[in-house]
Length: 119
Image (tube, rainbow, N blue to C red; front, side):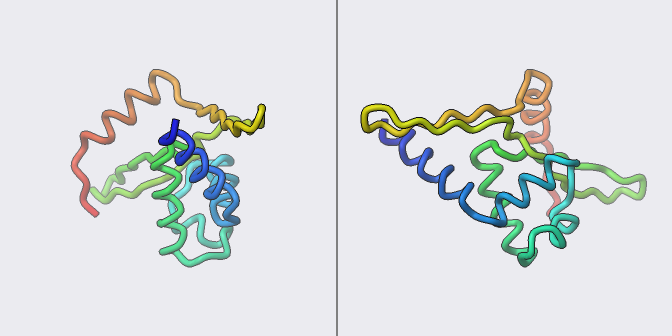
């Protein structure tokens, strides 16, 4: 399937990026804002945000919006990658991505997507 092959290639390219690897590692330890990731990633905040958007696109990172008592809110990100397997069989490269999503996570993701954004 051509669409799957393209997505597989993009995921492999994405995971070969050092900033992406650092984002996944720090976001696996605890949910963090992009600003909190900056010292760990050795990259500009703009680059970190671009990589976060790529990771969100492929479901490898989850986004949570946290509201503060003063009415402000901010986004925190956590890893959603559990395991990635790459296999090569008779000339076919296959990638199997296991995400941490479960039913409550999917419901929260849908709920978060329906909420208004004030960026």
